[in-house]
Length: 331
Ligand code: DGY
Image (cartoon, rainbow, N blue to C red):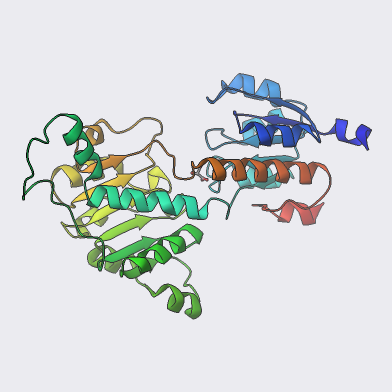
């Protein structure tokens, strides 16, 4: 038993909660980057070389070059639900299992997207700054007016797990919900979430809040471009807690600066960690450093799930949340 465990060999590319590292160490030989910053590419390749398992994060490019340099790799377990950092087709060709961390982060990410929505509409960050700057010298009737949320229309772009969690939250605010997705939800889900499917143009035209929850795919890159932003109401808000490149950031800067829309809340950016300089100077946008799933409990659940996925593959068992399950049946 112990002899078999010692043969399993994992590299963890980024600092994770210590409990998750210990979980991996209890069943495998583990090397890990204990710094919360990306490793230089050459170091990542060097330290991964010869290992069978990788626990990685969204800033690691798992591409043809890495897969070719590490032919013993059997599994790359991403500590994220999104996996646009991974060339899944190349991994599948090479028989490398890819896993992600769905479900465990759904509610936490929706909580944060909802916080951005509320912060942008009710100008929470501007209000905080106003008080800190010592400008709150008297109550004012006309101060920091924002947009109402209750009773308005929420447009959800991408009606997967997180999009649906947003729809559930909208019910508590008495909102009408529209959603756009390539696949229609079943009638029971639409009824339960009081959500109606719409095409993107209708959703943009009718929504007071547009919130993005679609994965980054070739067809969703710059889905929200200048034309889309011009279709939105001048009083509407855009929220993006999915992937930055779904929004054309330069067009969004223009939309916010010129009043095409009222405001935005962004947790993700086109070229992270770079933020378009035009956004930084605008007061009608709330900015966050990609922390949608960053509650302590959820980040631990994500790390544990990734470790469990990695160990399962190395121990010859089925991973819990594979992205390319066809690799498993081929073996
Ligand atoms: C995800 O899970 O895809 C997040 O963006 C990373 O936390």
